[in-house]
Length: 300
Image 1 (cartoon, one colour):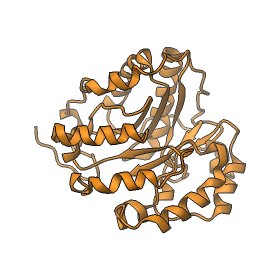
Image 2 (cartoon, one colour; image 1 turned 90 degrees about the vertical axis):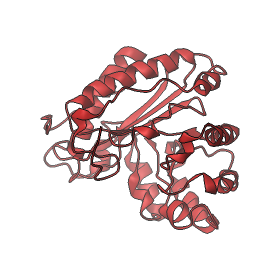
Image 3 (spheres, rainbow, N blue to C red; image 1 turned 90 degrees about the horizontal axis):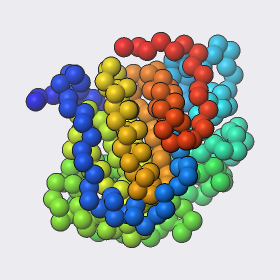
Image 4 (cartoon, one colour; image 1 turned 60 degrees about the vertical axis):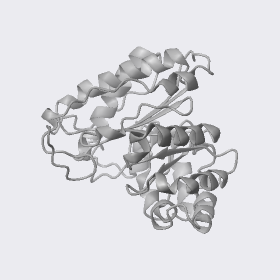
């Protein structure tokens, strides 16, 4: 099968992609076996951003503040905006004030740490970022760290000092995009052991053009899924497959589910997230609010 990759994970022919979820890595069951099955998981579902221009059709006409409205429809945001700049402390504080008590943020690590410095002499950037983001207080669930696509196993020695730089009360989740982290079993096992040691959540990316990143290896009792839809009718069936897999993990001891929806045409993201929430409430016994979509027409 040949596909033309345009953006990250985007393909021109999603109908030709085998979206079957791989079998679990054996280490996943081992990690989950240390936990008791929860009566209800902590479930957070949301989009990557709250911009009105991207989420066209989501906001009612006359909406004055996008975050205020968004945070009363969804209980979380991935918050990609923090990758591009370190926002002032008062901005984080304003986001805290605008959102309900049960809302949670998952700020993406500033690119100065991960892409400019590549986890080398990153301390100044990290210190400023953590200090300002701390104004989210208890609404800061964990930091989302996305490594550069060419950050490969040759840089593994940089990971442990980076993990040690975080205070004990701060949790992080990391996305690795270089395929060599997962192709060599010896390299992969060294990585997974390190992530488990520091209780770092191993992010799973589900996107059409990068099936090599579907490692299905949990390193903590949390599943952080970055779901990239293909703006194709298969998107909904793929979500059902995830409901089935997550239900299996819950039976084994999974405690937290962090599920964030992305699309190349982002206006479909709230629709997919709403579909997922309905299915999750039905299967997991959760009671997340069903978001109201101003214009619920699917753009494909």
